Length: 277
Image 1: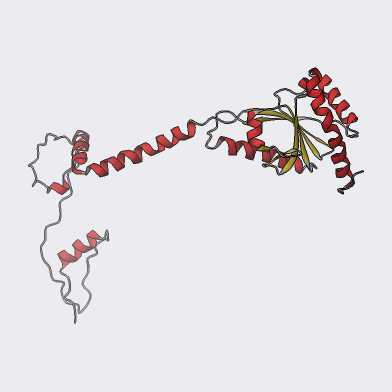
Image 2: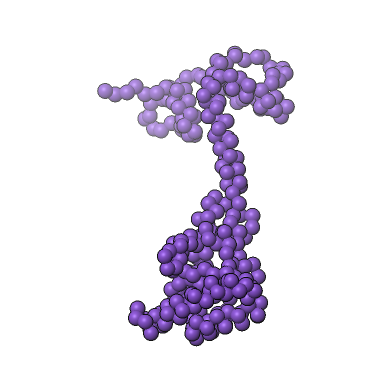
């Protein structure tokens, strides 16, 4: 079936709707039939509005007009004010809209209400094998380090005192905190991972002093013979701080019974077997 040809006015309207330029013949080709002509009214260009009129339209206020009022539009085309929009939507939709707007604020409050764990450690490794942990803010004094050297000598551990490094958590203040304990554990593990790349091969922990935050981070468990760190999966000894050991006779007596085990474990580690040296 052959579709009838579009009349020129309709064809030009189609082309105009598709943003295509309309082309008409200006010359008649030889032996060509004459082009049928018809009359149609072209759509008048809209009269530009003044800035004041556009502003009133945006504010949803009637603006004075000197032109003839046009035919009123249907209700669905009329601008809707904020109050009318809220009256049209259901209470459930309004509640969902308010919750979606408040969700980011509430999430920020939940993040901001957590405080990070705060602790400072002095860390060093005896020949890269035993991790010395001192739960204190400042590096130990020279007198405390000499006392530690005497303890190692009494336990027959011929190791040079390690160079201590300070580890503070959090690394930076002001950062958002979601899981204080897990973030502190990950920070300490990352620090020790960096030391392993420098040659540390930690086999056990030697902890001087106590700290509630440190106990949580390392997850220290008491066993029958010795304690251990579940976080690092390593055995551990925890004794009083060096300052307390120097001043307290009771602390010295409690430590004296452990020196023999220190000596035995050090020799086992040095020989690479489990037999008593």
